[in-house]
Length: 209
Image 1 (cartoon, one colour):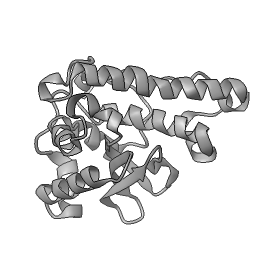
Image 2 (image 1 turned 90 degrees about the vertical axis):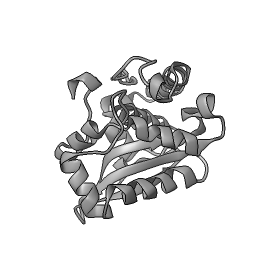
Image 3 (image 1 turned 180 degrees about the horizontal axis):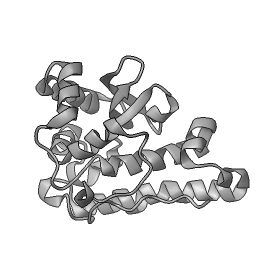
């Protein structure tokens, strides 16, 4: 098996009007995201047993640098699908109902998620996940390459990449400004889909939703 970054669900410049420039997306996707795939493939050449495993199997069973490359590859696949040029605004439908049930209101959820994403120390990810033990949505943070996939009771719904490489071209060290922009492109249709499916493995474009 050869590992690769899933195709972007939109053009590199599609988020520019909402505040994430073509240059930012290009460097993030072409250099960082694809770089994790290259590192994982290099590891698989050195250890052919890795080629027999899926990306998620590697994440769940391997530690160290190989885990880091695999988890970052999957996290980024999920991140790009969490964004959409025609995203943003206030959610509707089931995702809205579950947010209201779990957090009390959308405004409360937005406040708590923003606090988690902007306040996360160092590199990492802010997630909206569903806890299958409690059947409730919750905000979850992971450091560096870590991912909710290592916790069987957590189902990823949305994510915000808070590594500096996700925003430094556009916002330098102003992470709060980047997180505010994330709200303008958050893909509620993808979140809705995640509530009803197993962990998403497929490719799609925003126009498919």
